[in-house]
Length: 205
Image (tube, rainbow, N blue to C red; front, side, top):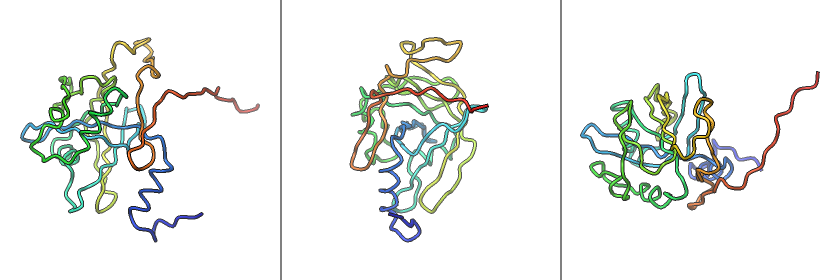
């Protein structure tokens, strides 16, 4: 069946995309407002886009009234954010930060989470996240009336010592992190425990 997105309601387009492009890693983004309030929110329109320079991209939706949500507003205001990856052990706290809190609420505190200071940026790391990426915004692209894409440069990564296998080569024990990913609609998530490996082939000479 062909879905002509130009002829479909936005919700139908969303359902098709989020039900097929899976699993999607979750960027648990922390930002700080101009008043110093910490914001935390998860986004699954997210991935790494390159490593020279290290780059991430995050798709951010607006409120129904067209206003930017807190994460987007804070990034545009001060250009800094941290991407924290989500282990299964913090899935309930991550889900709590999905709630639509007012801008003056510290969402880490509301979810019972502790913050750790970053090195390069103002927004904090989330205690318990095995990986946190400190980022500065390189560009904000308006891709539609209700969405923007933030392209960020990663200044540094914090990886829990328990998962570092070879620091010089950047080898980490990914399976042990027990990271989760977003699946299709209705609150479905995936664990990263069912894995298989394929050797990369070489082209015939």
